[in-house]
Length: 300
Image (cartoon, rainbow, N blue to C red; front, side, top):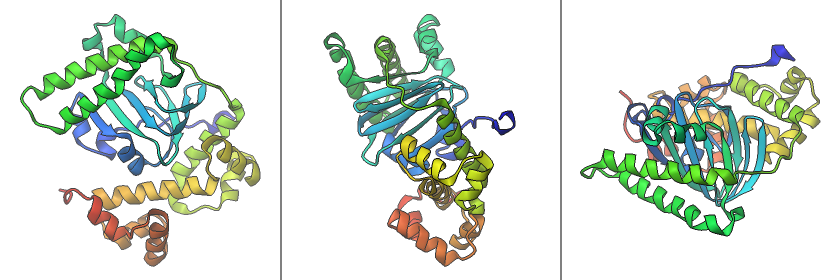
């Protein structure tokens, strides 16, 4: 099986989502907005040089942190240190916050020893915490809402305020990390097949391969592949392929100057009209309407 191993992709959010992330030590975004862009099925990936804190106020998540697998209900949070492989699938109603922090700032704010405690990934379901930790847990959404307001504003002392709020959040999640837990539900072989499928989709989705070809490369039947995807992602395997096509279509519509026809051909559609119908059926908007509604500015 060694020949099937693929390097785990590093997602540089500043390059694929918002260039502001490249210039800032602290970045914040609504979970729903990132999910709209990247999709609710986030294949295994990592973030070089960045810590990420995900806080979900609603919904359920199927989460994979290195060798640990969880099914967890909101409210919850999970922390991923730099380079740690992780993947997750969330329901449509999942909402919350995502905080991305450069590792150098984490070390500086927590003065070494505290930062070391955050080098192991963990997931905490707030509803399962002991009574003495509920007050600490209640601070998390409050601090993140303050972070959201400060991040969106341009008030005096903004940078200092963002650092101060980041420090409070990191201390809080460090305190709560002792109560990390979760429920392992899936065989490692199934996880390997699922991640292998996602890696192949990432490599070949513009080719519009039939499902049997993915299954053949992985060495399983279509039925087993579909069963694994339904159990791990709660989605059929074909839907995962379509979601990846839509993710790339949305990225190109927002960030590129390519015409709708050019985007259709780039994504492997032989007929731009079929691409438009596919997009409308999946998203509820035509590609042109989606571009107008979501594009902030023409690319340079």
